[in-house]
Image (tube, rainbow, N blue to C red):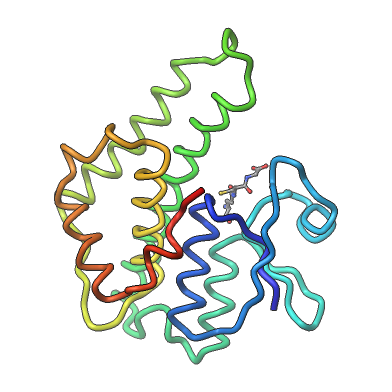
Length: 198
Ligand SMILES: N[C@@H](CCC(=O)N[C@@H](CS)C(=O)NCC(=O)O)C(=O)O
Protein backbone atom coordinates (compact mmCIF):
# COMPACT_ATOMS: atom_id res chain seq x y z
CA UNK A 1 0.00 0.00 0.00
CA UNK A 2 1.18 3.47 -0.78
CA UNK A 3 0.14 6.50 1.21
CA UNK A 4 0.27 9.89 -0.47
CA UNK A 5 0.98 12.24 2.39
CA UNK A 6 3.03 15.15 3.72
CA UNK A 7 4.89 15.60 7.01
CA UNK A 8 3.07 18.84 7.89
CA UNK A 9 -0.42 17.44 7.26
CA UNK A 10 -2.43 16.63 10.39
CA UNK A 11 -4.74 14.22 8.54
CA UNK A 12 -1.71 12.39 7.13
CA UNK A 13 -0.18 12.27 10.60
CA UNK A 14 -3.35 10.70 12.00
CA UNK A 15 -3.42 7.84 9.51
CA UNK A 16 0.35 7.31 9.68
CA UNK A 17 0.06 6.94 13.46
CA UNK A 18 -2.80 4.47 13.02
CA UNK A 19 -0.78 2.43 10.49
CA UNK A 20 2.19 2.32 12.88
CA UNK A 21 -0.04 1.34 15.80
CA UNK A 22 -1.58 -1.50 13.80
CA UNK A 23 1.84 -2.52 12.43
CA UNK A 24 0.65 -2.10 8.87
CA UNK A 25 3.26 -1.81 6.19
CA UNK A 26 2.78 1.26 4.08
CA UNK A 27 5.11 3.07 1.72
CA UNK A 28 4.85 6.78 2.32
CA UNK A 29 5.06 8.96 -0.77
CA UNK A 30 5.47 12.62 0.02
CA UNK A 31 3.41 14.87 -2.21
CA UNK A 32 2.91 18.61 -2.31
CA UNK A 33 -0.86 19.04 -2.39
CA UNK A 34 -0.40 22.74 -3.28
CA UNK A 35 1.24 21.71 -6.55
CA UNK A 36 -1.43 19.08 -7.31
CA UNK A 37 0.85 16.43 -8.84
CA UNK A 38 -0.62 13.84 -11.25
CA UNK A 39 -0.19 10.94 -8.82
CA UNK A 40 -2.49 12.78 -6.42
CA UNK A 41 -5.16 14.32 -8.66
CA UNK A 42 -5.38 11.20 -10.86
CA UNK A 43 -6.18 9.14 -7.79
CA UNK A 44 -8.22 11.66 -5.85
CA UNK A 45 -10.09 14.33 -7.83
CA UNK A 46 -10.16 16.46 -4.68
CA UNK A 47 -6.35 16.65 -4.71
CA UNK A 48 -6.20 16.14 -0.97
CA UNK A 49 -3.93 14.14 1.27
CA UNK A 50 -3.89 11.60 2.72
CA UNK A 51 -4.84 9.30 -0.14
CA UNK A 52 -4.17 5.58 0.10
CA UNK A 53 -3.39 3.48 -2.97
CA UNK A 54 -4.01 -0.22 -2.38
CA UNK A 55 -2.26 -3.11 -4.10
CA UNK A 56 -5.51 -3.79 -6.02
CA UNK A 57 -5.29 -0.33 -7.55
CA UNK A 58 -8.05 1.23 -5.47
CA UNK A 59 -7.61 4.71 -4.07
CA UNK A 60 -9.09 5.40 -0.68
CA UNK A 61 -9.79 8.74 0.95
CA UNK A 62 -10.47 10.73 2.98
CA UNK A 63 -8.54 10.16 6.23
CA UNK A 64 -11.57 8.65 7.95
CA UNK A 65 -12.17 6.36 4.95
CA UNK A 66 -8.56 5.21 5.35
CA UNK A 67 -8.93 4.75 9.13
CA UNK A 68 -11.99 2.56 8.66
CA UNK A 69 -10.24 0.59 5.91
CA UNK A 70 -7.30 -0.05 8.27
CA UNK A 71 -9.72 -1.02 11.01
CA UNK A 72 -11.36 -3.65 8.79
CA UNK A 73 -7.97 -4.94 7.61
CA UNK A 74 -6.74 -5.52 11.12
CA UNK A 75 -9.81 -7.17 12.62
CA UNK A 76 -11.41 -4.05 14.07
CA UNK A 77 -8.56 -2.97 16.34
CA UNK A 78 -8.64 0.75 15.66
CA UNK A 79 -11.98 1.56 17.29
CA UNK A 80 -13.59 0.20 20.46
CA UNK A 81 -15.85 -2.82 20.04
CA UNK A 82 -18.61 -1.53 22.33
CA UNK A 83 -21.11 0.60 20.46
CA UNK A 84 -21.18 3.52 22.87
CA UNK A 85 -17.41 3.73 23.15
CA UNK A 86 -17.04 3.43 19.42
CA UNK A 87 -19.46 6.29 18.85
CA UNK A 88 -17.53 8.39 21.37
CA UNK A 89 -14.25 7.62 19.56
CA UNK A 90 -15.78 8.49 16.18
CA UNK A 91 -17.24 11.76 17.44
CA UNK A 92 -13.91 12.70 19.02
CA UNK A 93 -12.23 12.02 15.69
CA UNK A 94 -14.85 14.05 13.80
CA UNK A 95 -14.41 16.95 16.25
CA UNK A 96 -10.62 17.00 15.97
CA UNK A 97 -10.72 16.58 12.19
CA UNK A 98 -13.25 19.39 11.98
CA UNK A 99 -11.01 21.65 14.06
CA UNK A 100 -8.12 20.77 11.71
CA UNK A 101 -10.30 21.84 8.77
CA UNK A 102 -10.75 25.22 10.50
CA UNK A 103 -7.04 25.57 11.25
CA UNK A 104 -6.13 24.68 7.66
CA UNK A 105 -8.67 27.16 6.42
CA UNK A 106 -6.84 29.88 8.38
CA UNK A 107 -3.46 28.76 7.03
CA UNK A 108 -4.83 28.71 3.46
CA UNK A 109 -6.48 32.13 3.82
CA UNK A 110 -3.05 33.56 4.56
CA UNK A 111 -1.20 31.38 2.06
CA UNK A 112 -3.38 31.72 -1.02
CA UNK A 113 -4.56 35.32 -0.79
CA UNK A 114 -2.47 38.39 -1.32
CA UNK A 115 -1.93 40.24 1.95
CA UNK A 116 -4.53 42.98 1.29
CA UNK A 117 -7.20 40.38 0.46
CA UNK A 118 -6.80 38.33 3.64
CA UNK A 119 -10.23 38.47 5.29
CA UNK A 120 -9.76 38.69 9.05
CA UNK A 121 -13.45 38.04 9.97
CA UNK A 122 -13.17 34.65 8.21
CA UNK A 123 -10.01 33.84 10.16
CA UNK A 124 -11.71 34.88 13.41
CA UNK A 125 -14.73 32.70 12.63
CA UNK A 126 -12.55 29.65 11.99
CA UNK A 127 -10.41 30.30 15.07
CA UNK A 128 -13.53 30.59 17.25
CA UNK A 129 -14.53 27.07 16.15
CA UNK A 130 -11.07 25.69 16.92
CA UNK A 131 -11.07 27.47 20.28
CA UNK A 132 -14.51 26.11 21.21
CA UNK A 133 -13.19 22.64 20.38
CA UNK A 134 -10.16 23.14 22.63
CA UNK A 135 -12.35 24.54 25.42
CA UNK A 136 -14.69 21.56 25.26
CA UNK A 137 -11.85 19.05 25.20
CA UNK A 138 -10.09 20.79 28.12
CA UNK A 139 -13.28 20.74 30.17
CA UNK A 140 -13.65 17.00 29.61
CA UNK A 141 -10.24 15.62 28.66
CA UNK A 142 -10.63 12.34 26.74
CA UNK A 143 -9.59 9.25 28.66
CA UNK A 144 -6.54 7.29 27.66
CA UNK A 145 -6.96 3.63 28.53
CA UNK A 146 -4.84 0.60 27.67
CA UNK A 147 -5.83 0.68 24.02
CA UNK A 148 -5.54 3.66 21.71
CA UNK A 149 -8.18 4.43 19.09
CA UNK A 150 -8.87 6.62 16.09
CA UNK A 151 -10.15 9.48 18.24
CA UNK A 152 -6.89 9.56 20.20
CA UNK A 153 -4.82 9.70 17.02
CA UNK A 154 -7.01 12.50 15.65
CA UNK A 155 -6.58 14.50 18.87
CA UNK A 156 -2.80 13.96 18.90
CA UNK A 157 -2.62 15.05 15.25
CA UNK A 158 -4.68 18.19 15.91
CA UNK A 159 -2.56 19.19 18.92
CA UNK A 160 0.60 18.55 16.89
CA UNK A 161 -0.71 20.80 14.13
CA UNK A 162 -1.49 23.52 16.68
CA UNK A 163 2.07 23.26 17.98
CA UNK A 164 3.39 23.53 14.44
CA UNK A 165 1.30 26.42 13.07
CA UNK A 166 -0.29 28.18 16.04
CA UNK A 167 2.46 28.17 18.64
CA UNK A 168 1.84 30.48 21.60
CA UNK A 169 -1.86 30.99 20.78
CA UNK A 170 -3.57 28.19 22.71
CA UNK A 171 -1.26 26.44 25.19
CA UNK A 172 -1.76 28.66 28.24
CA UNK A 173 -5.52 28.21 28.38
CA UNK A 174 -5.39 24.53 27.49
CA UNK A 175 -2.58 23.09 29.58
CA UNK A 176 -4.71 20.01 30.37
CA UNK A 177 -4.42 19.05 26.73
CA UNK A 178 -0.65 19.38 26.84
CA UNK A 179 -0.78 17.01 29.82
CA UNK A 180 -2.93 14.66 27.74
CA UNK A 181 -0.34 14.77 24.95
CA UNK A 182 2.45 13.83 27.39
CA UNK A 183 0.51 10.79 28.55
CA UNK A 184 -0.34 9.90 24.95
CA UNK A 185 3.34 10.05 24.01
CA UNK A 186 4.20 7.59 26.78
CA UNK A 187 1.70 5.16 25.29
CA UNK A 188 2.78 5.87 21.72
CA UNK A 189 6.52 6.65 21.72
CA UNK A 190 6.63 7.06 17.92
CA UNK A 191 4.62 10.28 18.22
CA UNK A 192 7.55 12.75 17.92
CA UNK A 193 8.57 11.16 14.61
CA UNK A 194 5.06 11.13 13.13
CA UNK A 195 3.45 14.30 14.50
CA UNK A 196 2.92 17.16 12.03
CA UNK A 197 6.26 18.79 11.33
CA UNK A 198 8.20 20.54 8.57
N1 LIG B 1 -11.41 15.60 4.98
C1 LIG B 1 -10.07 15.36 4.52
C2 LIG B 1 -9.22 16.62 4.66
C3 LIG B 1 -7.86 16.45 4.02
C4 LIG B 1 -7.15 17.77 3.83
O1 LIG B 1 -7.75 18.85 3.91
N2 LIG B 1 -5.86 17.68 3.57
C5 LIG B 1 -5.08 18.86 3.28
C6 LIG B 1 -3.66 18.72 3.82
S1 LIG B 1 -3.65 18.49 5.57
C7 LIG B 1 -4.99 19.00 1.77
O2 LIG B 1 -4.80 18.03 1.09
N3 LIG B 1 -5.13 20.24 1.26
C8 LIG B 1 -5.00 20.52 -0.13
C9 LIG B 1 -6.23 21.13 -0.70
O3 LIG B 1 -7.25 21.28 0.02
O4 LIG B 1 -6.19 21.46 -1.86
C10 LIG B 1 -9.45 14.18 5.27
O5 LIG B 1 -9.91 13.87 6.39
O6 LIG B 1 -8.55 13.52 4.73
